Length: 195
View 1 (cartoon, rainbow, N blue to C red):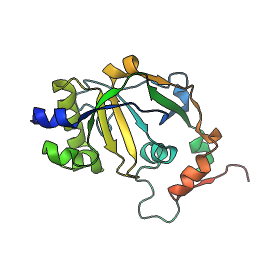
View 2 (view 1 turned 30 degrees about the vertical axis):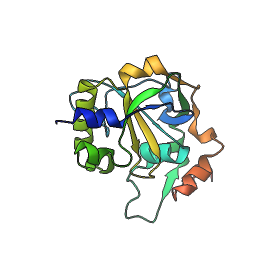
View 3 (view 1 turned 90 degrees about the vertical axis):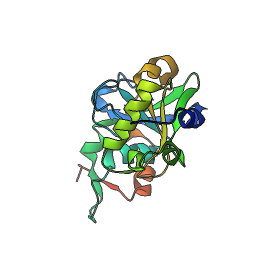
């Protein structure tokens, strides 16, 4: 994939996330900034780097991590409480501004890249774009709009995570005071295991 260097430079901005939210498996609560190799929207198809994803608000973090497309074409929009118990949440902040390529509005258009890169269910285009940016430009990651809620999200390359990010201790998602309002905003409810 070839990108216009001027367009990338024009879209690179200093961005300092404060209290962005990251949902992680509860088993990894002790390492809220930990990352593994995965097959996600902007992951490397060749496993050349790892990414940390975080969202502007809890509803978006839940939508991007847990809900995703699971309730399409169904009226039963219910998560079991036991499933929520499998997750934890941490706040992520930048100690120094991140240099992120802004894909939110006209970014993809200006780069000459399919909007599928950030807005489709299928991840191939986003992965190709991310790998090209990671290998060719000295940036820390990507700023994009959630395809599910349209809120801001970040994908930060592993090379910037340790140098520029800190996280609060992770807490169980089920203990979040705004969990129910966040789920309701997504049209989702919780089924309690206690009857």
